[in-house]
Amino acid sequence: MSSSTAALTAASAASAALLVLAAFAGGVEARERESAWLPAAKKMAAAPKKVAAAAAKVPAVIVFGDSTVDTGNNNVVATMLKSNFPPYGRDLGAATGRFCNGRLPPDFMSEALGLPPLVPAYLDPAYGIADFARGVCFASAGTGLDNATAGVLAVIPLWKEVEYFKEYQRRLRRHAGRAAARRIVRDALYVVSIGTNDFLENYFLLVTGRFKQFTVGEFEDFLVAQAAGFLAAIHRLGARRVAFAGLSAIGCLPLERTLNALRGGCVEEYNQVARDYNVKLNAMIAGLQSSLPGLKIAYVPVYDDMLNLINNPSTLGELYIFGAVLFSFFTGLLSQIICFTYAGLENVEQGCCATGMFEMSYLCNEKNPLTCPDADKYFFWDSFHPTEKVNRFFANSTLQICLRELLS
Image: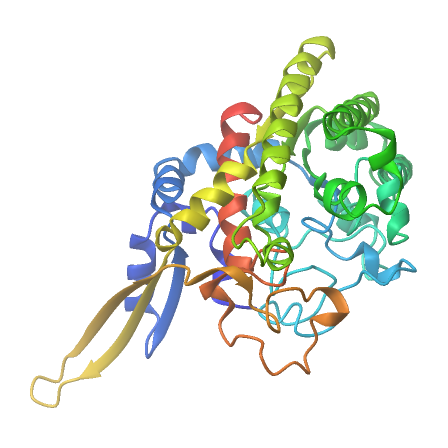
């Protein structure tokens, strides 16, 4: 696991100054890294007490959605959409089924809240209910708000994720008792990321027939209604604090750029769809909160965060701190040399894996000689999914919203 995986712990949130101290204390050739997206980093550094207070209130992180948050459920599903092989997980130390070179946003959020650094997949036989009591992921890569989306690649539909959530609660009651189980479910932080596949794998791919049933605007309305039904369902089951991600700039994914080669750049039509859908989703969330007692939903503006990084890649830098211990034969004293460098993203158009233009899942494999040596220079890991470095930023941004709107 790379040292970057500790970037969102409560300790590192204190400030980059802690890294300087660590470099002095760490001995020969110490090297640490911390995210240097300055606005978010300053907020985290300025509010360690707020993070600590929130951590005390959050017993678990519970995750629903698609490949952006699937921590390994598809490993045991009869689907071709898997990532439990190298080079996936390269910077995590193992290919766990995460569609990334390392960790996903819920992992970083869990660690920042004092919980385990990896949110386990519910279907992973290596974990049990004692693990799931502190965090659990029901997400499935390739799924969507529309049940038809899950059918395209034979993955877990969203309704089944909710059924697993019900089963989880029964197991939790047997494990911890009714009162403790109720508290965990009520006080948990719920993270939901879903919707991209409904458009790119379903509607625009012309494989389910939805394009014949709905105009684009009508399909957006249909999906928003599905999202409302899902939120109402988990509210009935006890969920109270939900971070719900909007669509990203889906027209800027490397795969869509490749398909748009004749015109070049992002597919603006798809980005417009994402913007329109997000407006409707935001309005639904506002209305739902007022009608369901006790429910708090924080809308996460992934679209804006993504375009900010794509348009300003140098702003997501890494603060590298090198510490070296030198012994002076003249004075007999130890001295330290500390050097700082700052490096942002270098490629925001292609993925690190293979050519980075269309490869994903089995097309992204360890035998491809073109895979980049340093994923931290890239926004995307494969043609669809961000690198761990970018996921860490998304996690930090989402956590700030949660601290403000859900956990205060």
